[in-house]
Image 1 (cartoon, rainbow, N blue to C red):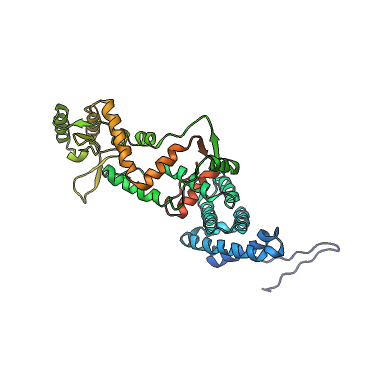
Image 2 (cartoon, helix red, strand yellow):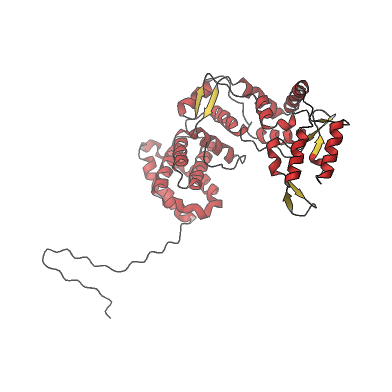
Length: 366
């Protein structure tokens, strides 16, 4: 068989000769990602004069260096760089990098590109990420810190089963990593964020105070509990024994040693309790009767609002013993207007928390 193909056609006809084309898609590697970044630089620098080109290229190179380090653990996701819409965002990110000298901005932009890869086809998140890219070079350091604290504090990991001082120490260590510069004061930073579209300021609404937030999230820390040695105490001990529940289902109240409390932050967490027959054995769900038994422990609590208010005051005293927690409480409680964080602000704040290693991405951005 001849290895040539021929076609005949009449006068003025167009002749097209074809051969079978086989395309092998082997994915994309780091080398190709770098090439794509370089190919897009011309679009990013076209609005600048020759005088600025050297500076622009240096800044984009810094972004690329940070980005490649960020993508090291995302090798399987690099095919996003072949997506035309992602390439448009890449150019926007390079333009943003060209207009800033802050190293933190390059890290933020790299994190936003990583987030764009992770959200995939979610258009709402993609739109928010594009909006965040556009304001990275404009947001002030102080406003970004304030935005991040606002976002992060409402997403702190819930305390575990440790004592109140132990759990507060964990929070102090986490939040302390954010406080590498002073928190913003006055109302100007909120107006700045509102202009950038990162927050919506609601003048006739206020933030819950730190005290209100803790009491709402962790009522188990401040509810009075069961008085030691009382009739209800012995009822509780008998109930635990009867249902085969461990004695540490009840623990001494950190804020009032005369009382015991159920070792849960909230009553609605009972369904999540698991029991193990041994330290290294499998964990089992509660039986219905065990669940009902723990529920009934709350019915044995002393109902004394004055004692509960004392516990709340003591909890805030414990909170203020930790330097970072005290600084944040005083700052947070002084914010007079309610800043509702937009999707753009959420993306930016989360990227800032992630680049510091404080938060894993939650999806979608809200």
